Image (cartoon, rainbow, N blue to C red; front, top):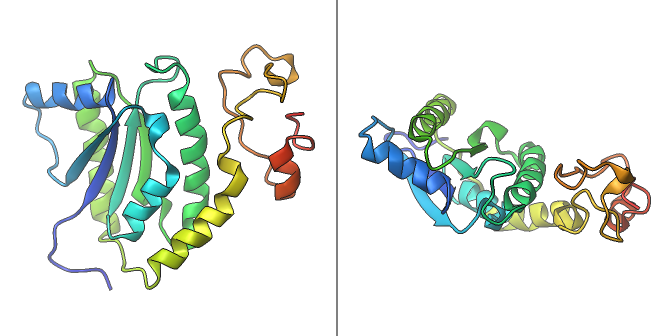
Amino acid sequence: MPDVGRDYRIIGFLCNWCSYGGADAAGTARFSQPTDLRIIRVPCSGRVDPMFVAKALLSGADGVLVSGCHPRDCHYSEGNFYARRRLEMLRRFLPIIGVDEGRFEYIWVSASEGSRWRDMVTAFTDKIHKLGHMPRMTEPAHTLCVLEGMLGQSLAQPDMGHSPDGHPAGGNPDAASEPRLPDWSKPAEADATGKENGNG
């Protein structure tokens, strides 16, 4: 049973260079914003390990929001591409461990987009309120271990649109900038080596 009467707890992992600036711009402009969000500033959205999100949710957070720079505008060049690939994988696994995927979202907000930040946070907070409080998990530590095992090699970075020799896969000039999700129809061993999933 969800806890009744307690405040909603939403965790936000914000990139230092863009999204944190956007949140600050919204505050400076005195935009009305939800008060449920608790911000954690990180150097880059690519620094957000999916297990940070999972641990927050399984520890009682009602929702988790990750926000970074727009694609192709990352301070560290490709950090948000890494983030998008990892976090999209995490979203697919959340229902498997009993967490509604609507409790997690990742967005892109620049330092000048205070109004966009306000709109995105308000929409996400409204969605969390409709979902209600996060149910208590009986064995969160065990569930975290299971999730980490399921993610496994899928979260490795080297296959981000590149073949093992470092060149864009398939000769596509856009492959380097578009993260590639693993082929879920292949065995984990084949997908990890990159020899049977089209990356080799």
